[in-house]
Image (cartoon, rainbow, N blue to C red):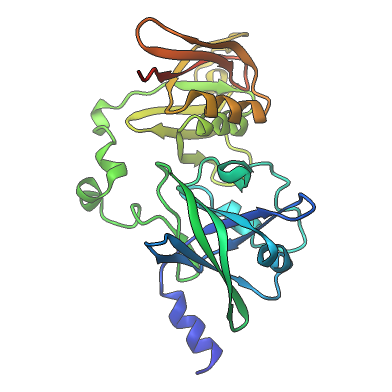
Length: 302
């Protein structure tokens, strides 16, 4: 079997797009993009990921005790390209942060799978890392798929009529005539969007697609919002934006303490410490990157 025929055939096989990350013995983060990733066993829960033996990250991962797989989704193809590029600081963008098991992960990933290293297997010119799954996270972002040497979004590639009946993302999307959502005016569109991604929103659209965004559309369940550049009112309507806080956002989360810790890790200001409310919610206030107050709350469980 010649290499060209083999790789051409395998290019037709859809694969997930993941970033696998760990810390070395010196505390330095290591990561790589992997499409050779799959489940291997249900009992015990095992996953398998393959790494080129010639990769610079190979020694760190074969010696690691744990690793975290971030399953990439819509709008994250640039992350995949970065972690597949040699000779650069793949973590310089700061978008991977300590998450499950304290390992580097992508907050807005479609899913995350944290593993302890179960075994290391020889696989020709690659090494297969078999990981025992310890923790998982499932987000709302549509997964990214690599096929025919290109990135694809499965939901986008099906007819709209099929998506409405088969795609959970589309089922939770309100009909077009019933949609209404606020626009947040931001000095740093990207940073503000990342802030809301930490609160459970997923990125649905970006304009322009590459470079510094002027518009980012976000969704959390049936709730939508858009982050636009601060000069949007002047550019679109001839109305200057007002200085100071312009709104307060309320976001309900599953675990308030974990969310506040993640926000504190990226130096988000805490405006008001968590407090239990008589109506059954625990609420804290933080500030988004533009200084607007955001109430972050969770239900009080008896």
